[in-house]
Length: 450
Image: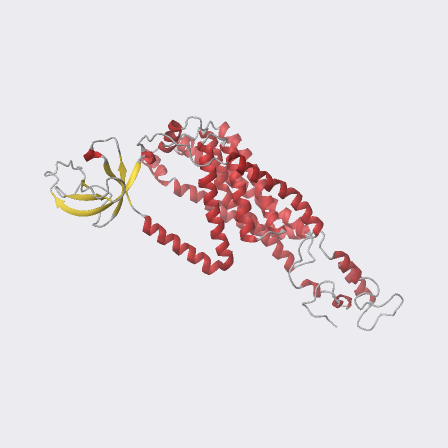
């Protein structure tokens, strides 16, 4: 007679001849001994991360004198209060030769909405070929130059996009919570914490002159630990994903350091890095480039390692009798599909971010090798390939770790062995003749499977 499928491994159902009822139900947690081994690795690591956060905590970005260049400008809020169509000649506005409209400009009246000059207005001429257009009542961002003459202190530098961005963020949060429920809420909490660590620790610490690689490793590790454990729980499955992510990040750090030096990349390839270097000359820009590679790879690595670990656990749940080699092979079949899709996603994401730059090279009709060899593109190539190598390596590494852990000694294994012994769980005592439905060979085979 076959016992109920919901019985645990130590139940009396295992004494019956068809002993496969233990194949149902969730995979039990790993043993106490194995949990201690995992804790012995991760607890000191987590303690070191906490110590690093405390020692290197910057306490805010260092102060500096405003240069008024790029993002270092002082800004104020403004609003378009009036728009009037005027002749370009009447306002002495120059015209582009490519303009299809001969003499049609707009004069926008802008009101300062914040700061000591709140309520004052100034005008700005919008030419026909200007890409940025205004509408009445539109919010704008004003560049503020306090040392300029009174009539020239303000100019429009951008439009206010606060409401549409906030609305989009709200839609995103609602979608995550509706679909993910409690997991979705925890994912949003982890996202907020990650952004906080980035803005309150990583960026200010780099500006204070701390080693960018060390700051990125400590900050990235803190983000990983908080995000993974808060979203997936404190358990062996999550710990395996953490270990796989750590090993992959170590590989990315080593490869990134080697190839950034070998390719003679400086990291100073944009106006933004130039301003940063002029304001804080002690910052190691090359280190910032390497830190960016590590932080940029972290999110994708978390996705891969968690997915591979969960896949192996589910495979063990479906086939509790599978050994680690079988689990590893099945997990790698899933992982290869994951690699194919994620690597292509990573490359396309970098290509999309650098699309304007690629268009400029296309206009210049430069050869492929020349384009790839330029520092601007070479940085993205190194960033993409180093991150992709770490991503690819994380799949077999995490799959092997998960297969070994989930196949290791289980809690209650001693009790299960006792229940399969003579006279236990309804099994016949020594010397008793097997019943018609309980032939000895079947019982022996079951014990060997256990």
